[in-house]
Every structure is written in structure tokens, then in C-alpha cells.
Length: 69
Image (cartoon, rainbow, N blue to C red; front, side, top):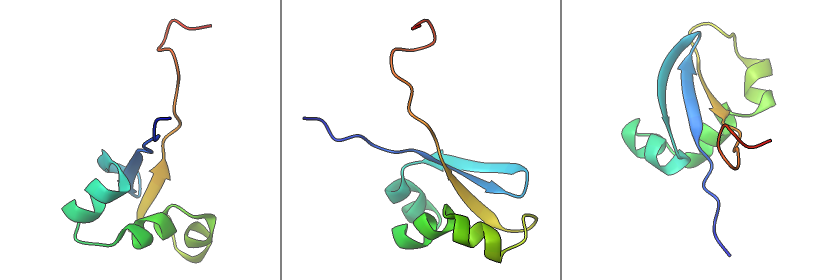
């Protein structure tokens, strides 16, 4: 059984900041995994303005590449 790794993209408003796992992003930006997980939640989106905030978005996993139908 393999462990799936989720990747997240960080954005500040419309500007792309970085991509990686929660552990990688937390170490790069000196924050906790829980903070990044909260910044990916709908609650954080409702409490903050879109501009000037860092948001995390979980990327969807695809299987089989581009040619799979």
C-alpha cells in the first residue's frame, strides 16, 4: 500500500508563490503545517480578503498522464 502525497500551490492574490507538499512549504516559509492547512480551508477564505493574503490550494491528482481516456 503506497502513501499518497498531496501537493499544494501557494498564491498571494493572483500571484503564484510556490508549490510543494505541506511539509516542504512549511519549512521554506517558516510556518507550521497546521497554518498552511488552515490557509487552504474555506473558513480562511471567508474570513480574509482575496488580495494581499497567502492562500494554499490543494492540487488534484491525475492518474495515467495526459493520454489516458
